[in-house]
Length: 168
Image (cartoon, rainbow, N blue to C red; front, top):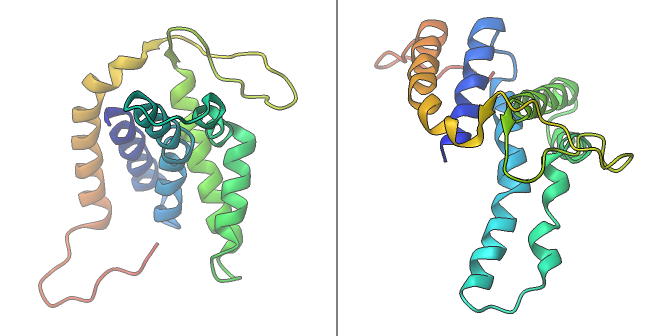
């Protein structure tokens, strides 16, 4: 959970600084690699631990969504759901959010494996190892606070009776 908060907070900080165009798509791009690439596999492992006879492969089937090629595929498919005039911007922001997600993950060190960022062309594993994967627990609260402050400064709070802000 702390990892999702960290990714979301960093996305908000980036968009608050650089501009708010397609902010929801950028934010989604930072969250989707874990939501599509990790949560289903963890769910399968949880169900297996409860006695459901699921195959091992089902737990790892989702991993490519946490890698650049999977992120690009998801960004393309989701951007096709946007109105034609927004597709390019939505796609770029989904992909940009995925790139930010991967950049943050590459900073971590994990027990066992790194990330096969060149999959399916190579199975070389990459990670920089500057932070422990558990460090997000300590980073999440200050990043969430910084993101909330940055969002408030950038977009403000809606005033009573004012129309909601345009999606952006």
